[in-house]
Image 1 (tube, rainbow, N blue to C red):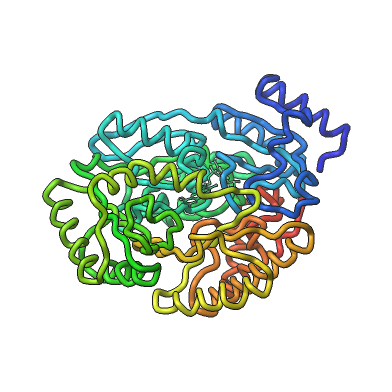
Image 2 (cartoon, helix red, strand yellow):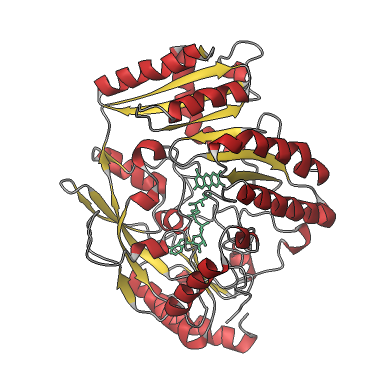
Length: 469
Ligand SMILES: Cc1cc2nc3c(=O)[nH]c(=O)nc-3n(C[C@H](O)[C@H](O)[C@H](O)COP(=O)(O)OP(=O)(O)OC[C@H]3O[C@@H](n4cnc5c(N)ncnc54)[C@H](O)[C@@H]3O)c2cc1C
């Protein structure tokens, strides 16, 4: 926290740099920056507050803010759309939130070399719409695409449901511009997808959660829009039968974009015959011929395993609405949480048995009906489940204890606690289970080189980063 007098001085300096309208300081203006979608204990919902919020428009403005913060050792938290689920933006040490909302310019689309360069505050939805208008796509299908920004997606190493065929944002980053903690501007490398000349510096910022610098511009690989898109939607008796189809598909050679197998409470309204609760869908895109052949292949798997293929009308309706549905409607962020665990595919059954049959039950946590089981089908397999977060301080303690046990279980089975929701403050201690001391030491070393004063999003991501600078 900055003390009163210094805060006023810093505010005046920032106003001098950016102008009055790009500096927020009154409680009424900064209240929305006190938390993000992570469920922190009820009583501390409004305990933390940023000292100031700035809304720069250019990387030069970001640089000026960072230089000032660096001189005075003030914590800085870069902010995108605010949709992360693990408390990455909670200003636990006060400081300045750098909201990138105004940095949403799209600078260059290269039709030949297939890349786009944009400021990092642009939302994935806006960028995708721009690309579609020009015949291209970023290929990233993220449930939070309306809110999440390019900077946020890179900094959380976000998951896309089209990962089987098109990878995630991590596979699309070609070059980044980053304002480092000392105010220098870093260009991580040339705007090429492949080079063997340097150490791949851009990788450092993928999943860094704002702890290493502020990413101000990104050059990303794009693809031409596919000629055809389709989906196979099918119903099985239960999740486990849908999971059999998913496993068969994932070990076949057929190309698909991605998909899901889950237990659906509303399966009948989606066209399922009575009693069929296991839903399985698979996305396809490419040339017309490719999609036709792949569709038949996937349908063959479904039939062989006793599934029922949805008719065209229901498939089309599901396909049209599933991104929007997946986004907001399925997540009530305040009282629910969602697991994005990875466990090896031959341990899923054991994982779910111990999750719902033991751990969650002991801590009084119930799954949301119809969301007990779920598997994201693709290269980056994710095993999920949604549950109610218990109320009150005791409930919150139970929730934290349960999460620690889930983390222990996932890592014991050879998996990962959080395939796509990162660490933030939620998993800060639990990542000790996943990384050796040597690995954590290397991460701390990288942090010390890039941010020696520990001003970049302090107290997040690394286990014993306790610190305000
Ligand atoms: C309904 C819903 C659906 C979701 N679906 C998905 C999904 O499909 N896939 C998935 O991966 N996640 C999903 N999430 C989680 C979340 O949307 C992602 O983590 C997202 O990528 C965060 O982007 P953001 O712009 O909102 O980042 P924020 O929440 O604003 O920030 C996240 C982190 O990135 C850092 N950061 C942001 N911008 C920058 C920058 N320019 N430079 C440096 N650091 C920066 C912040 O400091 C913070 O640590 C979902 C969340 C919700 C609420």
